Image (cartoon, each protein chain N blue to C red):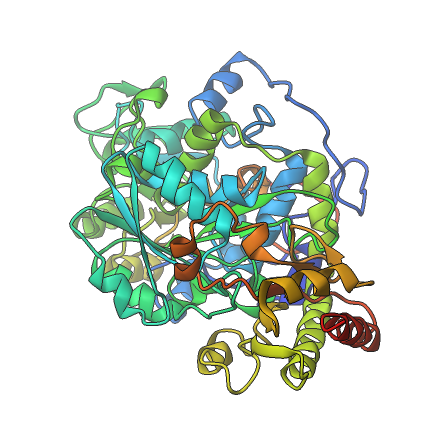
Length: 179
Length: 428
């Protein structure tokens, strides 16, 4: 067993979005392209506590080769990277803004992501704000909603499979790693 | 790469789910990874694996690449979010309950259970201070009546062993949902080809994979699966900080994978009832033909049930596929392709006739298993259910005249011939 490279079996597990929003914000091809093309990820709401879910996601992604920029006004440094109070304060370009904050904070975060010329905003699992998503789309950004970056990465690179989870990937093509 | 998604069918997933030909060899069959352990990339990666910050292979007591194919394939077929394979069906249900419960918790279980499950609940769980209340499942309201403030799960079998009653899964799931507790369903006799309990609201599904999933009677194994739809935040066993993982909160950290991650990384790790990679391989061979076998199993079972029904030496036949069965309406709803291939009948002449019948059979194998490709027979009162008292036997619906059949894939006419000649032998 290697990594996934083909069609996703569309049984749409584990989403609270209605079907039409799943098609729009959880498109497997879009998610795979984002994971393949993004290099620098600003994680808004990354905790400095090593046992918090956001820290699990960040340490996973860092090991997988992404540069993680912590956005947390209470932290100085997380996982060896300088932390910033907000997206606006980050002095260099970022590809993806990942949101670990409550839905009502998403509008402001999206505005900053647009200013920052990020390519994608990604709202973590169970974080849903359609208004913010539409604003990001109107500015030309890609949007993923109600999905976990770590789970999706593990799903498409094959590692989630090792722990018996249903990746929903069905293919007879030889495995190849895309990211 | 194709841009679209596709809802692949059951048979396609039987053959492909969970296995992508590996990048180096391209081996088409699933390789048998007969290894205990796995080399780490480096010390950092090893540390991350042990903290569960990376998904990956550590030790075959916890996970194995061959087993992972079996697990993901079964998860796909059951429409589950994931699966944990175990050494046996008994281990699967124990690990499910040991993950969920703590001392002083209670469960309400159907009384129409496999004898081994019944004793696990009534004796071993009892020793761990978990109490099981057994109820007649034919009226689902009985589950509700037995609820106490300590009830933490409902438990039943899709097709009850040995009399073939059908659990009203939707009704039981409603009761469980109203109490915010999970419904656990043993789907062994139905297999996901005949019924998928998660589609009807079950939270956890358990299997003895030894039976129809393998189909060959070569391997003991089990599996537990989870829907991914249940909120465990009020289950301290799943959501509280775990002292054995630096106070990791499994439900908060892994979300809908939390229960299964906990079951694997803690309960399976500690209980040790892991499956052998070779058995996983054999079960994968079984899954590849599941629909074809089950189709023939239920065809043969219905024909045998009809034959017995009209036989003068038969007192009664309890198969939910027969229109006069009290479970026929439920069978049409939950197992529309047929209510499995395991059922019971009563032989005229009671205990003595039952023994003579079994001794006279030529093709049916007399043994303690079901769900083999070969036809099987047993007399529960003297075997699988013998540990139970007379009172417990009656509660399980097992009389002394009861014969349990597991109908296999032999030529139907040969099965009917064998049953007929053995029934006639009972009056000699």
